[in-house]
Image 1: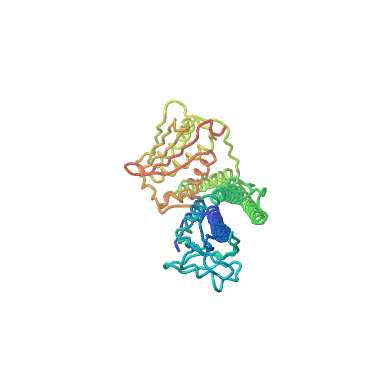
Image 2: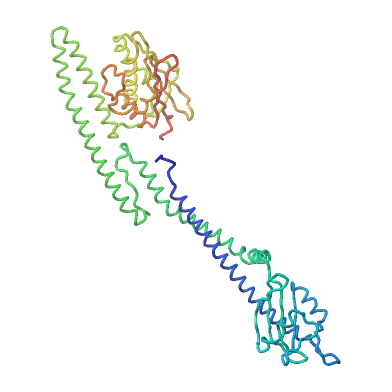
Length: 461
């Protein structure tokens, strides 16, 4: 199963509620249409019964005594408005048809229907189903049986009528209700999902440099509150474990400083021999490791305060002055490329100086004999910050290793100089404390470039 884009719960709920709303309104609309059509059919039958009374009122008896159907002009117009209208009349007494009746329909009002007071029926005629009604109505010539038959509406007629009803009666009500319902659904879903988004934002802020950060329980739904409380308890346990680890690292490094100093003094007191330089190198390496552990402990404990403005050029120049003799002893050199004027950043000079030392030390270990490590300081970055680059002519850093390069105790395949893998981790932690960034790039012509970008002096003010 391939991992796709994460499903949005908010979008899923909105879509489902919207579809449910539209489906409910559609069903209600269909039900309304069916009911309207049934009501229309009943209303039509009632209208035909009333029309039968008007028809009966137009029957008069001639001089020969024969009843005749003589509609007035107004009645003729009303008859013409009814499609395929057929009329037949007959006397209740005796069932004699009235002149002017439809011949094929006249037989329907006599015989078996003579005793009915009212009847609805369907009569086949001309290949169509015709809707009709039989009713008894009073007339100038006495009670008559009146049969009215009209054309049965086609499906198109029915749909046209239902459509007209929808446009005139339903849509003006349904559309605003639908829009309001959808808006309420969207607002409701977003209000329900909002606490989860806030919790996600709070949880993303939890990290080793932000001890004591907890998820807010305010406004959290009751069903989610136990999970939030469990996460807060887990964060507390992790914070305590980190504090214990930092205390152990700091205490161990502090306790090792004195024995190493004593050991170094005793080695310096040894007579010259082949083993003395090797022991001195080992003690220097161990001392450097202890100093790095102390730096890591201070950084993780938040003891590096970034509160003043420093001249980055001056800081780097002092560091290189201390590093240059060591580089010359290794058969290498260092060079500073910097502007003549100060480059001011907000930072801790000691911490940034230690980061530069680690970068230069890493570059010297990977630079071939006789090579030069170049340290450049740039000013006037976007937003008023500054940058520092350490450039070497070593083998470079493989792209696959760059993601792990700044992790503590990680060492790549090319392990030159016997480092413990803390130097670059200290650089990354120091830069993060200063609100900056560090990255590694390939250098034109071979080698690597470690670039630090720091915000300007007003960035943290």
